[in-house]
Length: 301
Image (cartoon, rainbow, N blue to C red; front, top):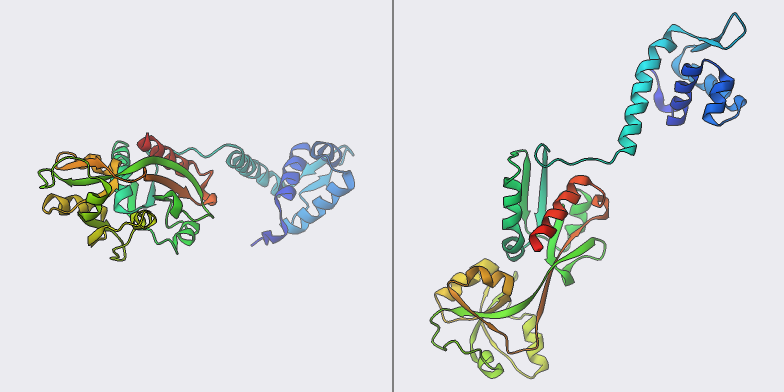
């Protein structure tokens, strides 16, 4: 077996030109190096391959390739051309034929807003080898998971994105108040005091009863009654439909339930909601990853 540890790309390129020119002087000119430097490379190649490769011609003009050199010429040229093509030509991603799985980390709110349309986009490729997975994100682990290729894209509120990731805002929305149709309080938007007197549902992964709206109310010297905490955004419409509780949620999510819920502006200064996607810099130029990000941007339009 040949020990290739002594070979580098420049050495193999020199061998390719030497075999084509069969003349050290002309080959050195093409390679833009000195003749002594190329002669030294030829010595290294002879040692590496265990063959003289090129011998002085009996006519005194040029050199003659050995049988070993003739065997190497075509496959070496093919290998170098293939490497050049790989390096110079950008990778192409064809979703209709690609064999690839993408993983998106998002909570159920983001999945409901953007994931359903993304799933339809994948389905439209008619390619069972193009797969999509949604999973929950652990803020403490997500950067490392992206470095290892376990997660491709994180979709989350813009203020929750790790600074080590690249990001782009997808959706800008507002929080609105929702209650079931036929709620006994009627359909007049509540003032601040009436809002605080209602019984509220909150979404919390930890089962807590304190959210960012509590901070806004505290600044006004007010407090609302949070009586129910759930871990999933998509549970809230079910809870509201069968109780007299109310909840503040992003309008883009509530619009999906407008047939069962009444929606009102909050009696607070406009509370914004942004949803962004984030990805690791290692994936920035990957053609498949770029396709996925473009599809998410399409869904956010």
